[in-house]
Length: 371
Image (cartoon, rainbow, N blue to C red; front, side):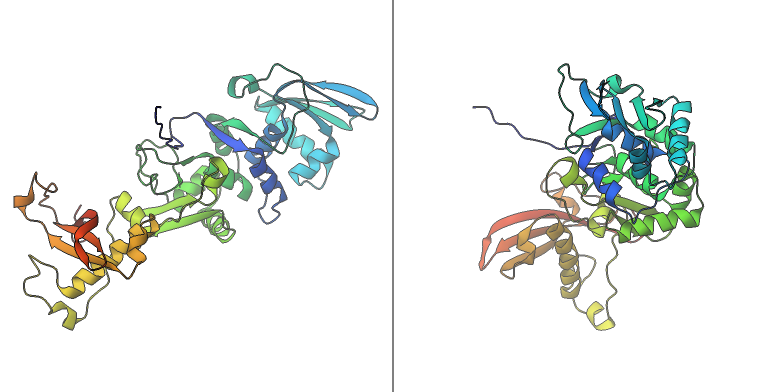
């Protein structure tokens, strides 16, 4: 019998993003995130959330209406509730703006009490089912084109909800084209560099807000536990990782993102704590071997990173470690030797039996400024 291995990815080249209806329902119920603005990305996603995948019938006020794929029929009062507008004419103004952008088409029915809208290009991006049946609105998912989301974001001022959806749609996971995406689902704005590091100035320009407002958006989403930010000193920037992304998109357990692990994935320096003068004097020749204090600190730092990746042995008191320096003689034997920095061999054994190695890792240590 053939064996298969499932590899989960959210690649940057895919032109659409899968949006689950439960996720939009959760956003509709979260009153802590503000809506509004003029980008209208969130409003467009809400309309797509209610659109049909197959033909169905809906009866309102004794009249039965046919609703085709990509369409939906609702009361204007319901629309105002979804959009969180105080007045119904404000909700209709949002629909008119989306229609002017050729993203939807709508019409008023029932003396202006009902509204029927259609998502333009629905058949192109979402599968249409041939059979007729009621279409559930609280399960399943729909595809939202990344190009449409980018168009909406770039043509108006984004609200907090628009910014969150923009980050969600531009998240990449486990794609070799994007650095740090193997660590967790990271936000990448598709600028062709493969580097996910962002700055508030870049986000402010993208969202049509001030730099201070962009920073407030990010800090609020962090406080609400939607994203986690991994910041680096200097001009490097910040990597934004989405929380609950893997459980929502792939129904798998979410992972803990470690800053040092992200730094290694992005080829940034991992800081090591300063030593006291007494610790520095321990050991004979630091050029060829690490002192006891250096070894402890290096192993502790690596252990924190690998524990976050799911290696339980690094949190067990029975584990034994060996940190051995590698010389140029080791080239083509154990690991490739690099003149930039020093390479070490880290082996992990279990208990008193130090002959049995459980894991073997290669470490590269370099001073700040080296790569």
